Amino acid sequence: MTSELTIRNYHPGDLLALVALVNEADDYDKLERATTLEQMEHELSWPNYHAETDCFLAWEGDRLIGYADLFLRKPEVGTESTFYTWGVVHPNWRRRGLGRRLLETLYDRAIERLVEMERGPIYFHGSSREVEKSRQALFEGFGMKPVRYHVNLARPVNNGLPPVEVPKGFRLRTFEPERDLEEVWQVDNLAFRDHWGFAGFPLAEFQHWTSQPHFRPDLWLLAEEEATGEVVGISLNKIDPDWIAQTGRQEGYVNTLAVLREHRQRGLGTALLAQSLRVLRQEGMEAAHLHADAENLTGAMRLYERLGFRVRKTMIAYRKVMREQKEQ
Image 1 (cartoon, helix red, strand yellow):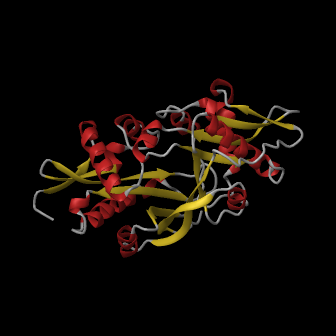
Image 2: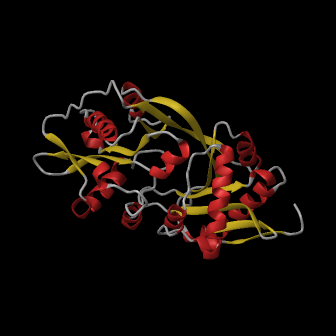
Image 3: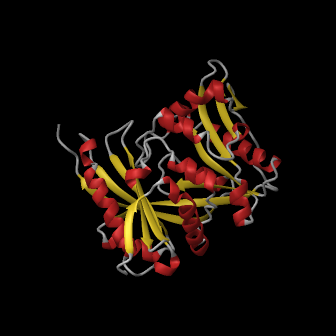
């Protein structure tokens, strides 16, 4: 690296440069994130995220050439805490050691924050697409190990949709923000409590999520028990015009599909997903996609494949243990 290289924390005046860097790198890597100023502002204002201390920008002179940040997920359920990390280096400045320097900077910051967790194991986490061999080499050279695989699946919605068969005693309806927000947040947390790596998240984050660009409550579907009015399943869908413009694909996104443990194996997940495909088709989508844990033990992968979804991309989760289980 040159002597002009500096790494410092983010401040609001960096927003335009940061968005430009992310989009240039994503275009080169074909990550298909379509980051806008509005979206980046929303991400940087996420509750419990601290850009001024946990986001680092690498400059060569007045040119932003890389960035990296971390987000600490403390457990709402369970005991493990995780520092989730992400970062990019501009394609023209790669293979010069900058990725390693940024990763070391994040790790040093994570060490400073260890005092915030009094108990439980703590992990340093990163992710890579299966095709990103250089990113995988970076993680592995830093002592991080591949621990989990996640997949992106997609299917067309213009024909051959499965029937919507709602189990007796239940009904499907559209999300109503003022009425349903807290209950849907609770279902989201409870349904994923037995999933790998899930630590829960506070209501403030869920509220912030619903203020994201292009959020549409009419695309969120709920499964409700008729006798009690209890929400027992959710399918939280999204149509992102910026992403569609960037990729050229008319695809909707099934962001979250979940059913409470005590109501599984009744067909509610199938009904919610089948109805979601119809809702997305009615909105002019040609396909739907979603992400899933390839090793999910609830049978989600079998459900997706049975309804016509096929794997399109694979992502690898990497971890480094920062602290083992701490005795009380």
